[in-house]
Image 1 (tube, rainbow, N blue to C red):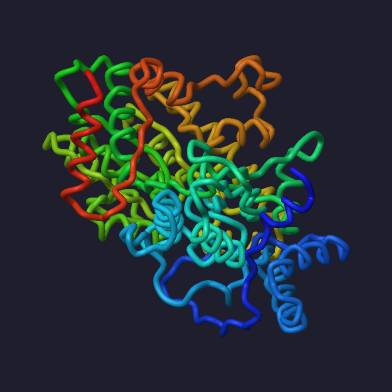
Image 2 (spheres, one colour):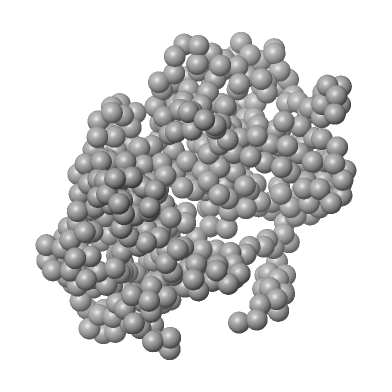
Length: 476
């Protein structure tokens, strides 16, 4: 492919019309400031990378606005370019383009729905930092490319940046997308944070930047299987029994972790899930996924005893820090069988983990005003977190990591004894992960899942047909 052909692939532009500034809808969660620590030259690059999508005649107006976003939020989101009103995954026939491109548009918009995304205005779908793309200019351009795509073209996307439409064929992927590709000595959290602020790289999680997020409702089944089989593996519960009378303690009621509360009830157990962000508790409670809510540990302990005695299942949201919950359980010698954690430790210093002794709101302010202090508090909290889990497992509890970089974060906080060899992580950690120890041996190792499909029509009868088609492919 020569330069002339490449140039033809990059023809989509934004119009030379300045969109009106938008009002933020009250009650919609907003991302914290990611901090501003760029040099003057790096800030210039960040502005250039954002302005490259904008017609030249609008640069004088938008450059100061983008710079203000960069300084206050630590990123340039281009808020005024967000489409007015609700963004949601509409029925596929309401989009323009070939079917495959329309289907991708359904997925993209679903990832940004107010009822789905963690921080919709900042294009974060889940996991604290997992974005669909970096800014709203990229979103608009991606949508435009998908609308004009043919069966003979492939859209290439690099960390949210739409590179262009390139010649391919009907059997080729309609989109080739990469996120967060950083090589060599720059492949670490410090450099990534800077590169993300400069508009060079993007963290797409697994399904945010991959445009196929299924939300907690899609994770409930896997979480249910994990909990039930943890009981069978660790506690010897027979296959015809459930988690009746069993305590499960964890943290997180966000995008993926929100499945824990509903899953433990389906499994018949008693779950207490700690969450520092009350808005996430409110969401799960209104959905009916959380049965009871309290910030009083004595009251929660009473409920635990009550439901254990009655042999009934319940999910309880503790509005508070998981470290405080675990230390209360340890101090009061409450016999807890199963423990895990689903805080967003892959973004442990960016707000994914709120340290003990700090409220969610205080933590958000600290990230912006004193990030070094915040990081220090996170490390101290992780050390406490480790020590209390160590004490509880010493008393007979079983703990597993939920693939959220929790144990790696503890190691990075200075607790080298969490490593299997006590020196480095080359031989793994002292506790297992749910994939290697629970869900892998019973499902993944045998080729079962994870599978996902999309009901593009949004019709319930069509969803049921896809369920039946999937079931017909599986021989239990």
